[in-house]
Image (cartoon, one colour):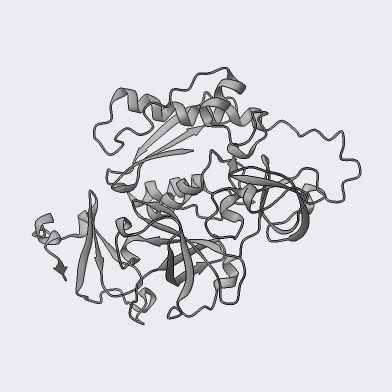
Length: 377
């Protein structure tokens, strides 16, 4: 699985390479700027899911931002994802190798990344862009067979924990055995050490993990995920820590990432010493991205703490006590158009998030000029 996007949309193209038994691999490109049927969206959400009962694997490369953008585009997996992030495999290339470097090392294949920053919102896509997009997904599929090699177990005879013992959410004591700019490895007494990325340290904005933790330091960690590629650990607060926090309570936060669709904020729960990263979408800001900078301290409110999907939705502005759940089908509302897209426009009706008016439901006489004017009913 891979994705491309442009400056004005959370996602513009989704690439899915599929291998079924002995059949030749196929690559599908889903144009997210074109109208999609509800059935198409549902089928792709099902395909992207990796529930315990599923009989397929989903392979990605550094998928955290892809996953956030999929959620915004309405393509979030139906079940909590258990994707295998190929970036976390030990390729013998040192810390944080890029996809092109891994492809050259593992497959002997030169992967051209020159079109990575091209305009992915332009239509039609050029033949070179189509080939580039399909090739990225196909390379991930090819690398998946190399990532499935069993780890070296020659020195694990005295291991206290097997990987089967490590259920998500379990807390463990561990020892930091290495630290780089982007992550650290922690020995928890299992078959292999686990990785803690800098966004899961729970220390706000982290520029260099090696400056936050040191080798041989004793730490308390939590199992975030166990995949075929390895053990993923976390030291941050949990989404559960934010359940029950009143939507009227302001919490301390710091900007840790900026995107065209909003800002990522490390926020501390009431009385907590560790932060948790959440997302403030642009329509829940009281300013624009141009007014924000990395490391800037802000005050945020919790809109939703989704424990099942480990997702924290935040706001930087006040909103009324009325919630989206209080609205009834058929109820008429007056709202303000907040943004226009190729598939419709979003309207703020005074609840925690704006609603989408799809182009097919906009009404025969409602042109984009009228929507851009502001108030609609």
